[in-house]
Length: 290
Image (cartoon, rainbow, N blue to C red):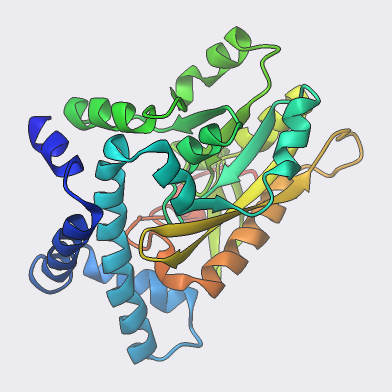
């Protein structure tokens, strides 16, 4: 822990120097998930040439290591600096709901720097519970909890969300979920086409919003330049949900996320084994939120 604390005290310029070296090592020496990354890119962008895909992959490695050092740096950033580095283009869209007493669901993704996002939201007056999948390594789980709670965002393990919701009833805030993760039980997932492939999504986000009549937003995170991001909210759906077909929220999220990835391809987490499941592996598969 002391080593990571030491790293967090280094200036970002020095950390980006470390990122440059790490990126080179991951790409050329360690070849970290190189085949996974190139295969994901090839199948997602069949219209691109091999040279174009290799360029995206090379940019991805640098963006990945930048994310690592930026995450480590967060405990040492000042509030003013984080606000300056993460600019919300339309926070009033969500603030109006919070002011009206509504808790809102925000569907984020592994795009840009998703780790800075909840803390930056808290700093401009949007309380946030950041829902996450716990890490199996105890040391890194504790480290990430400390990092994620630096400015008052509350990291909430996925399995603890119902209890947290009950405890915070009547306290308007953002429920932030990185919604492009691989479901633990694909046979119970919502399956749909995503980047040219049949893909399972967590159905719980839509079920949660419907059961508690919460509005749902997509947040697009764009890397403006190294260490600077722009976040924009986009309303996906709002109650009443009686006449909204099941699966609509997830389909709308899918559409917005895919558009973001196509516009900024190197910023998505291509090393993630997003398509390790396929329908034929399982017996009964439901494509609907029943």
